[in-house]
Length: 305
Ligand SMILES: [Fe+2]
Image (cartoon, rainbow, N blue to C red; front, side, top):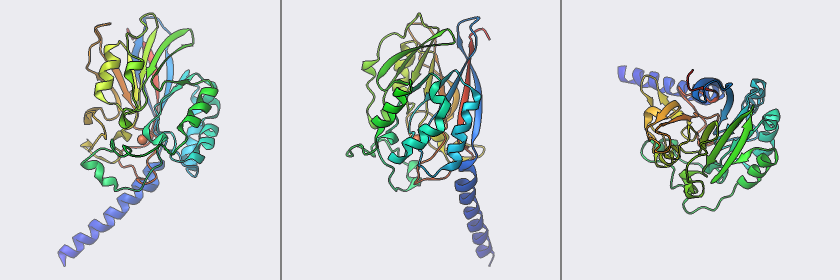
Protein backbone atom coordinates (compact mmCIF):
# COMPACT_ATOMS: atom_id res chain seq x y z
CA UNK A 1 0.00 0.00 0.00
CA UNK A 2 2.78 2.40 1.00
CA UNK A 3 4.76 1.61 -2.17
CA UNK A 4 1.65 2.31 -4.25
CA UNK A 5 1.20 5.70 -2.54
CA UNK A 6 4.81 6.64 -3.16
CA UNK A 7 4.52 5.57 -6.79
CA UNK A 8 1.35 7.67 -7.19
CA UNK A 9 3.01 10.74 -5.67
CA UNK A 10 6.03 10.28 -7.93
CA UNK A 11 3.80 9.95 -11.00
CA UNK A 12 1.87 13.14 -10.13
CA UNK A 13 5.13 15.02 -9.46
CA UNK A 14 6.53 13.81 -12.79
CA UNK A 15 3.47 14.95 -14.74
CA UNK A 16 3.55 18.31 -12.93
CA UNK A 17 7.26 18.78 -13.71
CA UNK A 18 6.75 17.96 -17.40
CA UNK A 19 3.78 20.33 -17.57
CA UNK A 20 5.74 23.12 -15.89
CA UNK A 21 8.80 22.59 -18.11
CA UNK A 22 6.88 22.45 -21.38
CA UNK A 23 4.12 25.00 -20.80
CA UNK A 24 5.42 27.51 -18.27
CA UNK A 25 9.22 27.65 -18.24
CA UNK A 26 9.59 27.16 -22.00
CA UNK A 27 7.66 30.43 -22.40
CA UNK A 28 9.15 32.24 -19.38
CA UNK A 29 11.64 34.40 -21.24
CA UNK A 30 14.42 36.22 -19.44
CA UNK A 31 16.64 39.11 -20.36
CA UNK A 32 20.12 38.66 -18.86
CA UNK A 33 22.61 41.49 -18.56
CA UNK A 34 26.38 41.22 -18.32
CA UNK A 35 29.27 43.68 -18.49
CA UNK A 36 32.42 42.62 -20.33
CA UNK A 37 35.57 44.78 -19.97
CA UNK A 38 37.06 44.50 -23.45
CA UNK A 39 37.12 48.07 -24.80
CA UNK A 40 40.06 50.48 -24.77
CA UNK A 41 40.27 52.81 -21.77
CA UNK A 42 37.91 55.79 -22.00
CA UNK A 43 35.79 54.22 -24.76
CA UNK A 44 32.04 54.68 -24.52
CA UNK A 45 30.21 51.43 -23.61
CA UNK A 46 28.81 49.38 -26.47
CA UNK A 47 25.55 47.47 -25.92
CA UNK A 48 25.44 44.14 -27.73
CA UNK A 49 22.26 42.07 -27.86
CA UNK A 50 23.17 38.37 -28.07
CA UNK A 51 20.37 36.10 -29.33
CA UNK A 52 20.64 32.42 -30.15
CA UNK A 53 18.81 29.11 -30.65
CA UNK A 54 15.40 30.56 -31.42
CA UNK A 55 14.39 27.30 -33.21
CA UNK A 56 11.36 29.15 -34.48
CA UNK A 57 8.18 27.55 -35.72
CA UNK A 58 5.49 29.99 -36.86
CA UNK A 59 3.04 29.16 -34.05
CA UNK A 60 5.28 30.24 -31.17
CA UNK A 61 3.45 33.47 -30.46
CA UNK A 62 4.92 34.13 -27.01
CA UNK A 63 8.43 33.65 -28.38
CA UNK A 64 7.67 35.95 -31.29
CA UNK A 65 6.29 38.58 -28.89
CA UNK A 66 9.43 38.39 -26.73
CA UNK A 67 11.63 38.76 -29.80
CA UNK A 68 9.57 41.77 -30.85
CA UNK A 69 10.04 43.35 -27.42
CA UNK A 70 13.84 43.27 -27.67
CA UNK A 71 13.93 46.24 -30.05
CA UNK A 72 12.96 48.48 -27.13
CA UNK A 73 16.42 47.83 -25.65
CA UNK A 74 17.89 49.88 -28.53
CA UNK A 75 21.15 47.90 -28.65
CA UNK A 76 24.13 49.18 -30.63
CA UNK A 77 24.83 45.78 -32.19
CA UNK A 78 22.97 42.46 -32.49
CA UNK A 79 24.73 39.09 -32.72
CA UNK A 80 22.73 35.97 -33.59
CA UNK A 81 24.65 32.74 -32.97
CA UNK A 82 22.37 30.46 -34.98
CA UNK A 83 19.72 27.72 -34.82
CA UNK A 84 17.20 30.44 -35.70
CA UNK A 85 14.58 28.35 -37.47
CA UNK A 86 12.93 24.94 -37.17
CA UNK A 87 10.80 25.24 -40.33
CA UNK A 88 11.08 26.97 -43.69
CA UNK A 89 7.88 28.92 -42.96
CA UNK A 90 9.51 30.45 -39.88
CA UNK A 91 11.75 32.83 -41.85
CA UNK A 92 8.99 35.39 -42.48
CA UNK A 93 7.76 35.52 -38.86
CA UNK A 94 11.37 35.65 -37.63
CA UNK A 95 12.21 38.66 -39.78
CA UNK A 96 8.93 40.30 -38.84
CA UNK A 97 9.57 39.84 -35.12
CA UNK A 98 13.13 41.12 -35.34
CA UNK A 99 11.64 44.21 -36.96
CA UNK A 100 13.62 47.33 -36.00
CA UNK A 101 16.58 45.21 -34.83
CA UNK A 102 17.33 44.56 -38.49
CA UNK A 103 18.07 48.29 -38.83
CA UNK A 104 20.74 47.97 -36.13
CA UNK A 105 24.23 46.74 -37.11
CA UNK A 106 24.25 42.98 -36.76
CA UNK A 107 26.11 39.75 -37.44
CA UNK A 108 25.14 36.09 -37.62
CA UNK A 109 26.29 32.53 -38.07
CA UNK A 110 24.26 29.41 -38.79
CA UNK A 111 23.66 26.50 -36.46
CA UNK A 112 23.07 22.98 -37.74
CA UNK A 113 19.34 23.36 -37.13
CA UNK A 114 19.17 26.17 -39.69
CA UNK A 115 20.07 23.51 -42.27
CA UNK A 116 18.25 20.40 -41.09
CA UNK A 117 14.61 19.94 -40.13
CA UNK A 118 14.05 18.70 -36.60
CA UNK A 119 13.31 15.01 -36.36
CA UNK A 120 11.59 13.05 -33.60
CA UNK A 121 14.11 11.42 -31.30
CA UNK A 122 14.41 10.41 -27.70
CA UNK A 123 15.38 13.63 -25.86
CA UNK A 124 17.00 11.58 -23.06
CA UNK A 125 19.68 10.27 -25.41
CA UNK A 126 21.64 13.52 -24.87
CA UNK A 127 22.58 12.02 -21.52
CA UNK A 128 24.86 9.51 -23.21
CA UNK A 129 25.76 11.01 -26.59
CA UNK A 130 25.80 14.32 -28.48
CA UNK A 131 23.84 15.06 -31.63
CA UNK A 132 27.05 15.83 -33.55
CA UNK A 133 26.72 12.90 -35.96
CA UNK A 134 22.95 13.22 -36.50
CA UNK A 135 23.28 14.72 -39.96
CA UNK A 136 26.32 12.90 -41.29
CA UNK A 137 24.30 11.30 -44.09
CA UNK A 138 21.62 13.97 -44.50
CA UNK A 139 21.31 16.65 -47.13
CA UNK A 140 20.25 20.05 -45.80
CA UNK A 141 16.50 20.52 -46.19
CA UNK A 142 15.95 23.94 -44.61
CA UNK A 143 16.62 27.18 -46.54
CA UNK A 144 19.45 28.51 -44.39
CA UNK A 145 20.82 30.42 -47.39
CA UNK A 146 17.47 32.19 -47.79
CA UNK A 147 17.53 33.17 -44.13
CA UNK A 148 21.13 34.35 -44.46
CA UNK A 149 20.30 36.26 -47.63
CA UNK A 150 17.49 38.12 -45.88
CA UNK A 151 19.67 38.99 -42.88
CA UNK A 152 22.51 40.09 -45.18
CA UNK A 153 20.10 42.19 -47.24
CA UNK A 154 19.11 43.96 -44.02
CA UNK A 155 22.78 44.78 -43.48
CA UNK A 156 23.84 42.11 -40.99
CA UNK A 157 27.27 40.57 -41.50
CA UNK A 158 27.34 36.93 -42.59
CA UNK A 159 30.19 35.47 -40.51
CA UNK A 160 29.92 31.87 -41.70
CA UNK A 161 33.63 31.15 -42.30
CA UNK A 162 34.13 34.83 -42.96
CA UNK A 163 35.63 37.92 -41.42
CA UNK A 164 33.94 41.29 -41.22
CA UNK A 165 34.39 44.79 -39.93
CA UNK A 166 31.93 47.27 -38.46
CA UNK A 167 32.15 50.77 -37.09
CA UNK A 168 29.52 51.37 -34.41
CA UNK A 169 29.31 54.56 -32.34
CA UNK A 170 32.81 55.44 -33.52
CA UNK A 171 34.27 52.10 -32.36
CA UNK A 172 35.90 49.84 -34.91
CA UNK A 173 34.93 46.20 -34.43
CA UNK A 174 36.81 43.32 -36.08
CA UNK A 175 34.71 40.18 -36.38
CA UNK A 176 35.30 36.63 -37.55
CA UNK A 177 33.06 33.62 -37.46
CA UNK A 178 32.74 30.03 -38.52
CA UNK A 179 29.85 27.94 -39.77
CA UNK A 180 28.71 25.39 -37.23
CA UNK A 181 31.40 22.97 -35.96
CA UNK A 182 28.58 20.72 -34.72
CA UNK A 183 27.89 19.62 -38.30
CA UNK A 184 31.51 19.89 -39.45
CA UNK A 185 30.97 22.99 -41.60
CA UNK A 186 33.52 25.14 -39.79
CA UNK A 187 36.48 26.31 -41.86
CA UNK A 188 38.65 28.25 -39.48
CA UNK A 189 41.42 28.19 -42.07
CA UNK A 190 39.36 30.71 -44.08
CA UNK A 191 39.43 33.28 -41.26
CA UNK A 192 42.71 32.32 -39.57
CA UNK A 193 45.37 34.86 -38.73
CA UNK A 194 45.89 37.58 -36.16
CA UNK A 195 42.78 39.62 -35.43
CA UNK A 196 43.03 43.27 -36.43
CA UNK A 197 45.19 44.82 -33.71
CA UNK A 198 44.11 48.30 -34.79
CA UNK A 199 40.43 47.61 -34.08
CA UNK A 200 38.94 48.78 -30.79
CA UNK A 201 37.54 45.31 -30.07
CA UNK A 202 37.67 41.87 -31.72
CA UNK A 203 34.71 39.46 -31.65
CA UNK A 204 34.77 35.75 -32.57
CA UNK A 205 31.39 34.21 -33.38
CA UNK A 206 30.38 30.54 -33.61
CA UNK A 207 27.34 28.40 -32.90
CA UNK A 208 28.66 25.40 -31.00
CA UNK A 209 31.33 26.40 -28.43
CA UNK A 210 33.86 23.75 -29.34
CA UNK A 211 37.04 24.31 -27.31
CA UNK A 212 39.39 23.47 -30.19
CA UNK A 213 37.83 26.21 -32.34
CA UNK A 214 37.73 28.69 -29.47
CA UNK A 215 41.43 27.99 -28.89
CA UNK A 216 42.08 29.21 -32.43
CA UNK A 217 40.00 32.38 -32.03
CA UNK A 218 41.65 33.16 -28.69
CA UNK A 219 45.15 32.47 -30.03
CA UNK A 220 44.49 34.89 -32.88
CA UNK A 221 43.69 37.61 -30.36
CA UNK A 222 39.88 37.82 -30.33
CA UNK A 223 38.74 39.53 -27.13
CA UNK A 224 35.24 38.09 -26.80
CA UNK A 225 33.79 34.88 -28.21
CA UNK A 226 30.03 34.53 -28.64
CA UNK A 227 28.33 31.15 -28.96
CA UNK A 228 25.06 29.31 -28.33
CA UNK A 229 24.01 25.72 -29.03
CA UNK A 230 24.07 24.31 -25.49
CA UNK A 231 20.61 25.61 -24.48
CA UNK A 232 22.30 25.96 -21.07
CA UNK A 233 21.74 22.24 -20.64
CA UNK A 234 17.99 22.78 -21.23
CA UNK A 235 16.99 20.44 -18.38
CA UNK A 236 19.04 21.42 -15.35
CA UNK A 237 19.10 19.92 -11.89
CA UNK A 238 18.73 22.62 -9.22
CA UNK A 239 21.90 22.74 -7.14
CA UNK A 240 23.86 20.72 -9.72
CA UNK A 241 23.33 22.49 -13.03
CA UNK A 242 23.47 21.16 -16.55
CA UNK A 243 23.74 17.43 -17.00
CA UNK A 244 25.27 17.71 -20.47
CA UNK A 245 26.49 20.41 -22.89
CA UNK A 246 25.94 18.54 -26.21
CA UNK A 247 29.46 19.59 -27.30
CA UNK A 248 33.04 19.68 -26.05
CA UNK A 249 32.71 22.51 -23.56
CA UNK A 250 32.70 21.71 -19.84
CA UNK A 251 29.49 21.84 -17.78
CA UNK A 252 30.70 24.83 -15.75
CA UNK A 253 30.72 27.01 -18.88
CA UNK A 254 27.50 25.67 -20.40
CA UNK A 255 26.02 29.19 -20.42
CA UNK A 256 26.83 32.69 -19.31
CA UNK A 257 30.07 34.63 -19.14
CA UNK A 258 33.42 32.96 -18.50
CA UNK A 259 37.03 33.04 -19.63
CA UNK A 260 38.46 30.83 -22.33
CA UNK A 261 41.87 29.78 -21.02
CA UNK A 262 43.86 29.84 -24.27
CA UNK A 263 46.44 32.66 -24.14
CA UNK A 264 47.05 34.56 -27.35
CA UNK A 265 50.70 34.83 -28.38
CA UNK A 266 49.57 37.97 -30.25
CA UNK A 267 48.27 39.83 -27.21
CA UNK A 268 49.34 37.76 -24.18
CA UNK A 269 45.68 37.71 -23.11
CA UNK A 270 42.90 35.16 -22.80
CA UNK A 271 39.46 35.68 -24.33
CA UNK A 272 36.10 36.23 -22.70
CA UNK A 273 33.39 33.77 -23.67
CA UNK A 274 29.65 34.30 -23.60
CA UNK A 275 27.47 31.26 -24.25
CA UNK A 276 23.78 32.04 -24.65
CA UNK A 277 21.36 29.49 -23.20
CA UNK A 278 19.15 30.44 -26.14
CA UNK A 279 15.50 31.26 -26.64
CA UNK A 280 13.96 28.04 -27.93
CA UNK A 281 14.03 24.29 -28.06
CA UNK A 282 13.69 21.66 -30.71
CA UNK A 283 9.97 21.15 -31.42
CA UNK A 284 10.60 17.50 -30.52
CA UNK A 285 12.02 18.33 -27.09
CA UNK A 286 9.71 21.18 -26.04
CA UNK A 287 10.69 21.59 -22.41
CA UNK A 288 13.11 23.59 -20.29
CA UNK A 289 13.67 23.06 -16.59
CA UNK A 290 15.66 25.36 -14.25
CA UNK A 291 17.01 26.90 -17.45
CA UNK A 292 14.79 29.72 -18.68
CA UNK A 293 14.95 30.77 -22.32
CA UNK A 294 17.00 33.93 -22.59
CA UNK A 295 18.47 36.79 -24.56
CA UNK A 296 21.44 38.70 -23.21
CA UNK A 297 22.35 42.35 -23.29
CA UNK A 298 26.14 42.51 -23.06
CA UNK A 299 27.57 45.90 -22.19
CA UNK A 300 31.10 46.07 -23.54
CA UNK A 301 32.99 48.41 -21.24
CA UNK A 302 36.55 49.79 -21.02
CA UNK A 303 39.12 47.34 -19.69
CA UNK A 304 39.90 49.61 -16.78
CA UNK A 305 36.23 49.60 -15.63
FE1 LIG B 1 19.90 24.96 -30.63
